[in-house]
Image 1 (tube, rainbow, N blue to C red):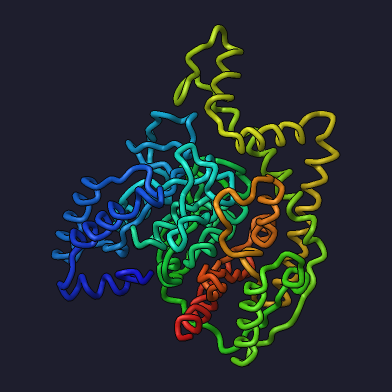
Image 2: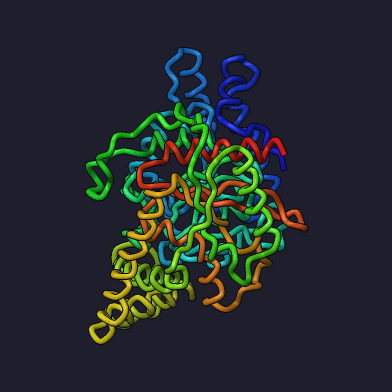
Length: 478
């Protein structure tokens, strides 16, 4: 599925030449949405009239030479990002009827540079899931094969780019929720360093993990979006004060890198043979280009999944305690007192996966088990971070698959544990707080996309994007 435009640079050349306009771009994407959304279930809401008005205003700015750096970029927003006056539900029944009272920092910065927002995208409820089967609004389908999942939780955002319903999407990544669907859909997904982008306006799942990240066709567009969204924010005390480089101008890779690949990750049972072969092909290409490519061992690979789920469910149980039906959102109709209001509203408003994670989190935070689970998991997280940082001091990048398999069939993973284990390769970057990107790395025997993941040291997104760009250029040439 070749997109009409694969990058903002292409669009802006056409805009400058007068061969297209923002209004024409919006009409193209709206037409694609109208043709495919009923089948794929990507957009929960399409802001057609508003997008047309934005496009007309930006066309006038272009004529006057005052347009922002994202003029011509049509973007979809995952349903966890606050945009004032627009519905915000986290794909959950419990937020029925809620409209955001403010615009989040990342979204506001995109608007300020003349990005055009086209609609709100389906996702796993409260960003909890790896397949986009947990939404209160139904399953999102992979555009390559609608019988398969798109990955989650930003599945709608990834399919929107895959199916050319918008040029880019803004998702969120807690344990791989941008990277994994990007891999399943054959597009690019970037998780920045934790704190690189303000979380103000992002509905919280697990606050010490959540990061906003772009999903795009090109590395260049990911760089452009990152440099606009990143930076300090007075509304978020956890946002980094680090200077934001001009990432889109720093995409020339170094002639040689030191690259480590996690050997015990690619030798795991259950790794799809085509995924293994794609990684081996990439490593061979890197060696042929003169890079140093060496195997490394990561001794805590098996501990990462339980550590991640203990910590994120604990944070989720705390963050989601605010949704009780009292001030906004869904309220159970058949209540008799305050206790029944809480119980029935939360039981009816939250889906099974969200309820499961709240229960797990409440359990690990309980007085009897806090030290046995939560405290111990925090210690293991520190060890994982220290080991990851140590490897990233020895090597410029760590390379491993994004996912163990390509996109699986809808309904195939009924066991929650098997679904959680699918995050084995993405949670490392989340636990360590380092940036990671998933890029396309070919297809399997059924034509389903394969994703390659690259990790770099904290705040080294410029190097990460330059390297990823060089690999996608090689993949495109092949």
